[in-house]
Length: 349
Image (cartoon, rainbow, N blue to C red; front, side, top):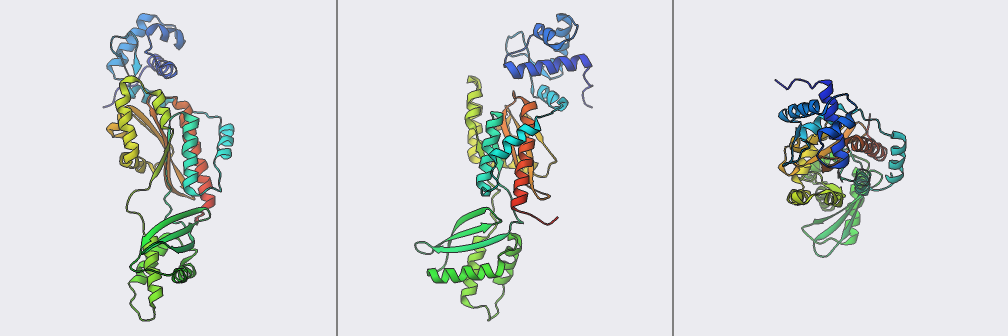
């Protein structure tokens, strides 16, 4: 069974304590709560309520301080009772000015990550979009040294990707142009997933009427459009914000977090769990399930292209953050990014 609900008085005192600690970063004493809460109670009554809240895991006493600070459970209480009402009009205007819809997907994602970081003063994290429904617009093959070929893929309306593939022989520029023409004539305008299926079928076709050049073109297309085996990448901005907020006793935790940013797997796994979620997801401290994030909060929201979630964005910062300000920024950024991608990569309804 869960804990009984807090009384109205205990709820007001706990909320006041958490909000004051977020603002000031110092343990909150009972006397300050009497003044800030607006309740007509004595300091002795407040001390009794604080003892009860501490026993129930909402707050804790750091060292020998007379004041208390919230635990992850205390922050969770605040988040669950927030009535967030952002200045949507002004915030939306800021986002529209910053997120340029004409940028390629990777640059757009980087802009979104930097925007999250600037608006929240935390680290902004945005997963690159998954676009299995992305349409191939054009492909070019350019010869490099030896048996290497540069592939230029134009996907959707704004996404340009460059890849290097290794061939079994050296091809002339003319042969590569012929191969590109064949692929563009055969598959341009089709979704990548459909093209991959077509390539698999074509490579299995041993009929004599498929000439050598066509088969080589199909093989190169297969290499160029192979779905990555690893999880989608992500862009992170604003690590310096975390450094500015770090205290002397949690630099080791921060170093571990920076290493996790480099290794990426834990962060990607957490974001991957959120891609099918509805709306904003909030992980406070140990709720993420990853030890490296035990001293941090992660606030995420999926973003869509059309009706499908194709990625996740969010912020990572210390548990002591202004949740009422950060949550709407994450939510609206996800909506704006999704709107741009839906225009750039339209899908059938």
